[in-house]
Image (cartoon, rainbow, N blue to C red; front, side):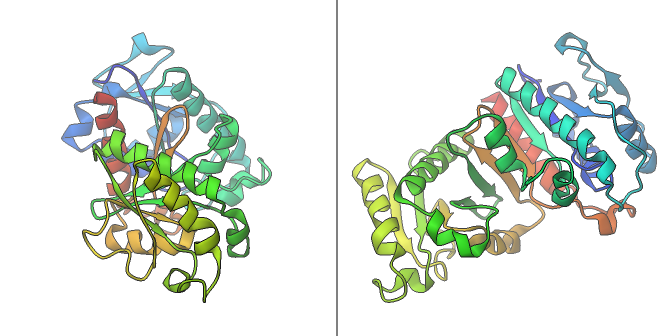
Length: 323
């Protein structure tokens, strides 16, 4: 058991979030630490999932930390979940899903704890919370963080992303020296604190093909990216680049890669090991670890979802908390 509870929001109840959570409890490492996790959810969602998976875990409804059991799923109940069918997301549940996320994240901040998040449907949530573009941006705004980093990891690769859920046409104008410096330092710190890499070698990608070919294919490398890298090196960081994206992912070159935009590197990490990839948000007043897959409504009613990403997210939060 960790000294502080780890809060879990399961995401959209009509997706695979509740399923992959319940399946992850079958791991001995997780099961023996049941008291470390508090699920912020409707009790009915968990009960329905247990029944459909033919699992018989006990449920313990809690009001405070003293109520926590190590022999049951600890649930902080949230009301407001409307009836739902697996595979059919309902806008009527947008408020409930956000209420779970808000409560879980607020408690994570209050207790300087960890937050584990299940997958959400952005279209559903944007029907209630206008311009909702994802967990990362929502949590940054909610906790007034100066800057956050989307950090993805699996056994094969650590990856940070400068810009996240914006159109490709806006990437160039969104990148600045100051932004690169902030994101790099968040990545460097995360590698040290979470994965115990003492002096990370981080490859910083260029924006253009072949990292701009000395300014012949775009100027962002010369004008923005290289000056940021040079300043990092001058301050003792082990930054390398700008690196061409077509050679950056050769095994063993770097401890991590910092990419300029979302789809520059995500296809690579998901190809290397889709199932075990997790999404970590750095820069919040608490550690947030998430599955790196969607709600998968097309298979939600089959109960055939792979739970490795959720299991890895729970393991990282547990191991981080024990250090």
